[in-house]
Amino acid sequence: MQLEELQQQWQRLDQKLDRSLALQTALLRQTGVQPVRSRVRRFAVWPAIDLLFSIGVLLMAGAFVGDHWRDLQLVLPALVVVAGAAALGVSSILQLQRVGELDWCGPIAEIQRGLERLRALKIRQFKWVILCSPLVGFCALIVGAHRGVEYLTADRVHILDRLDPGWVAANYAFGVLFVPVGYFIARALAARFHRRSWWHAALNDLSGRSLKSAAREIEHWASL
Image (cartoon, rainbow, N blue to C red; front, side):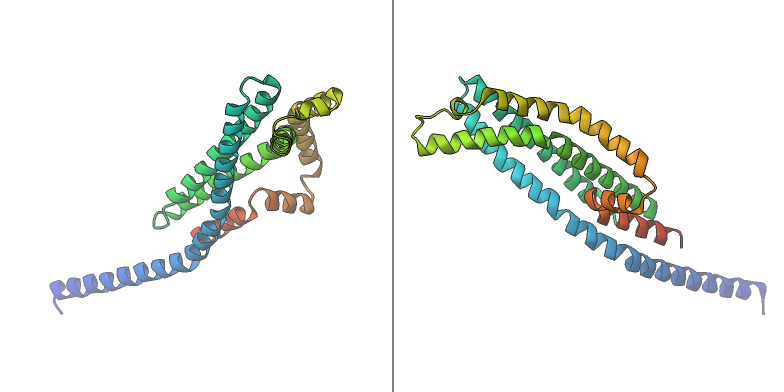
């Protein structure tokens, strides 16, 4: 056998080996990435629901501000609701954008980084929803109660005239103070119970456990 024929056979063997490796890589990617992709797509349903909810709240609260813009006692809580809904909407849009930017045909490391960024957005959103919920929730209660009483009484009753001013002020103060106090309490609990498995399970469930599980699967397949 001449050297030229040997080189040709060697090249053919190299080509077969390359095709075999490419096929195995494609099968490995399909087996490992496809389930994660389906899970992340299901996760995208919740940001879409949050976005629709925030749009509805923005429309109602914006209309309320327009109807009562002369009454500062009602405009201020309505503006707090508008700010909360706007922040939730922006966070939901960013999460949907992160999901759309995931390149499932790209390198595994890039997919994993994209999942981690998405998880970070989810955790940040959850943190601020919890910290701001007392203030935004009470403001929404005031706005909703006034709108309901206004409708039932043909605008003859002002809801704040029927409520104890001290009670209203105490709820506003609690909502404002809960943001920094709740933040430091959460940090203290995290420092104390960071080794407890139940604490990690709770954090995973509250901050997007499916994303963290997906990131672990991506990391596992990348290591193969």
